[in-house]
Image 1 (cartoon, one colour):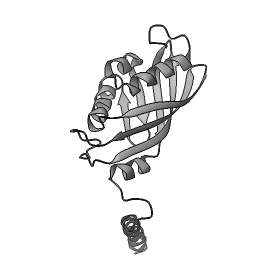
Image 2 (cartoon, rainbow, N blue to C red):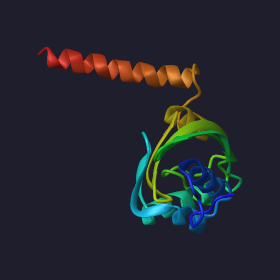
Image 3 (tube, one colour):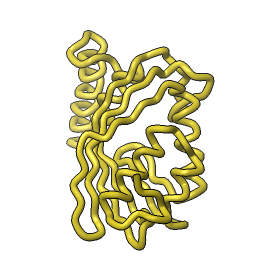
Image 4 (cartoon, rainbow, N blue to C red):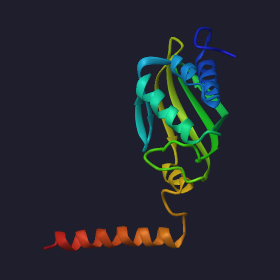
Length: 169
């Protein structure tokens, strides 16, 4: 398998990098990044390599100690690689995740990252996943279709109607 030092193409670098994420190896993960590289998990967080990147993933791995990540597919062309992945784990560690105390919930997510890789290093990563579904699985939002979700949507709709009525005054 390719490593930072000997990867010869974008797809190999992407595969090797995601292998280190799956192993929860923060040092190896950081080694794949160009200093100052930007990683954005859309709708959740923007990270700058290596410091905030390392801190965020350290928090994730502490909060979800059985975190597993498997690559489902990699498509690479030029300096771009798209990586479709599947991650699972249990939110039962001692750390918080995005300010949320551990709920003991099981998480099962799929997502896709679009990496820009130059000279064997990741310069940018734009990650996409369903953040609402993740929040539901973590217990931060009520399940889809549940009475709790209906009540939450009702409150949002009530606020929207009240704003509309106030704006007409």
